[in-house]
Length: 350
Image (tube, rainbow, N blue to C red):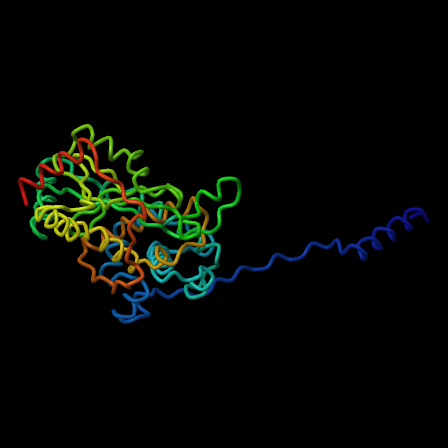
């Protein structure tokens, strides 16, 4: 070996020592032990933490688990753990990092799991969130409302609720600031007398007025097209129409007073619906910390789970006073054909 070759070898060794060119050995992955919450907790404790009974949770796993099977690579997370992780995050509104530690997975995995579970739930939206499909179903809904206090021909109650979201950056951010000065989505819901959600719109910014959301919804087009024989009940934030009755703002007769009283009792179904929904899934009351895209997805998924809880006869959680919704500040005066149809209805039935 020549002197030049020796100098070249020494230079390479020297450069390796300076820059530590040796490749580090790959760290071996380790996975924390995972125990099913179904085995960890008593029935009462499980329900408090996961918002469903054990029996109800098992039924949810049977309904949605087949769409959540992983490919088995790495730290495989079973469908039941995916669903239970999502329920705990949404129900208790825990920080995702805390929920991840409790279940032995990473925080990013919790984010991915919640989205994956929500997508699997929303795929079955048409099965669980739908308006009456025929006259027999519609009559059944109307009879349920009539049983409350005798208000006839009601197929659903409509209202909006605001769901707190993180600050939205950019030029459109101010549209999400509602009248209480915090960013939110304004979510429209139509429910039946059993508090099941039959229609939901979860895409409007917080400053949007309730009446505008309905006026630009597909549901209004269906009512105007004569698809339904019954009508909706809404508060005075909506325009009174032949298919959406609102209260009489200044009742002048005994019949109008009685109409208002029965209207309030019947329409209270949608207020109770919001209370039960938000008490089961606390994230809807205290707000989300996720991306706007995921929040809209989660709201629809939780509406479906709310309906499933009713189908499963799951026990309701106590409704807190703060869950009660407020009416719009600016009532809309009923005029035109809607006011005339309402007046005739009051004269005939009250």
